[in-house]
Length: 333
Image 1 (cartoon, rainbow, N blue to C red):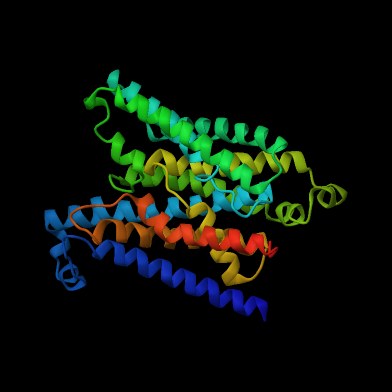
Image 2 (image 1 turned 90 degrees about the horizontal axis):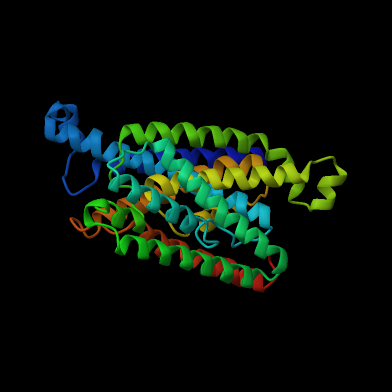
């Protein structure tokens, strides 16, 4: 019965994911109907550029990165045994943002074009530095709420340093940096999509391979040790994979808030299970849908003015975080 229910839910997620993806391609400030596409208007240069060089890479980027962000949050919540752990709340996204901003500014001042892979590596280093700092503090801070406050403060420090650097940088060096620093899926190219797809896919495969150890780890570290799970190695992989997912998002779209916290809890509430083999693909699909919907809202509601993606994700994601905190207070976690 449970398998039948999971099958229905996954089918609904897949259909919703496809529908939202197609909707993002056709909905925008320039109205392009399916009828116009079928009768060959897609081959007109302007329409072709809008559909296949602007909207398609953007929606594919939101789809891939949204899934990556949700999985990053799921892995962090598993690692910390903390329902409100996430890359944005713990300041990990801000750490990645700081390093990427420094790299972007210096490369622009030296007229050096940095590759997508180098951006991901830079963001990963920033994520790891911040995550290690949070880990050190978490050893001394056992209170969940206090740990979150510490993470938020680390994020503010990283953001403040980033703003300081941007303020004193030449305007020519930060043409695209301000929009990126607020979070945006605009400006995606198929080359970017190709790079992020490879990185996220490899990390996704590694996450699937860890599904069984994760399911045991969720029952407690001592229990996992007794069953022969290498807990230290598992923790390292959880950190590395969550950092890579978060770094990939930050490198291409900047910091995106609340997705990593909200989506795993929404998925858990829908599927009513804690099994990693179910939650890993479901979280990825849920994150993809969430980010694609938020991106469509960001670019269409006040068109031609575009909102930052974090503005929209915060509006829909923050109520979920409040709900999680209230449930935790009642002892439901």
